[in-house]
Image 1 (cartoon, rainbow, N blue to C red):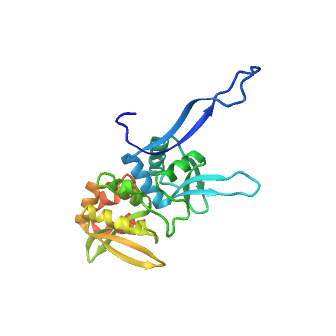
Image 2 (tube, rainbow, N blue to C red):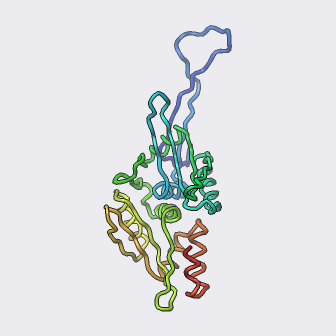
Image 3 (cartoon, helix red, strand yellow):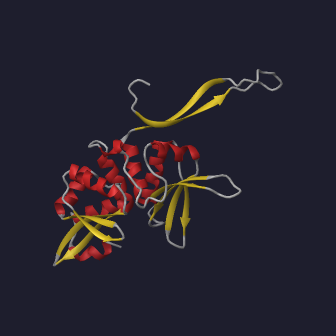
Length: 254
């Protein structure tokens, strides 16, 4: 369609079927094509960040059964339903699918699942990789642009980052942290932070993982203004920092 920006997609051919009892030539006829495509959008960029954080895309062989196709996004606390609902709405907007919510009472966590082959294949078609992400995860090239990279950062941080407030000799001090497993996306996230002129430190924390840390009021203010926090858990801590006293820090970080 003219004017529509499309990344990749899938195409399936639908065979025309004769009415019951009507004989047809054995040569199959094809009278229309269904095409599923993903547009390159800010919402898709944010979803990519979420999937690179606490998400996964899996294809699992099962002996004697059909292959399982799974998209999974995990959430740290069962009571944090607001962000889970936000992500489910994002799935609907981008993929036209809502996830199935399952709670893990033993670990106080929740998961969103989509068990559909076409959805998995669509996400793989844009350059995301199957689980495991360790040493393999990558941000697809179109989403490293200045227009879209900030939305990848937002999705990743909201799902797998943290806002930390500490009492530093009587002064409330903020920092933003993201941990990234060994993979090409480590360098890509650093490039995105450079692109938006954030000041950060990158520290080896063992087994190839790194912690990216942005310290201080100005970096928090810059992130809040330019990237944002759809996850209210992070937004509330940031807002708290700008309004409250350091003696309340412990409550904030629980």
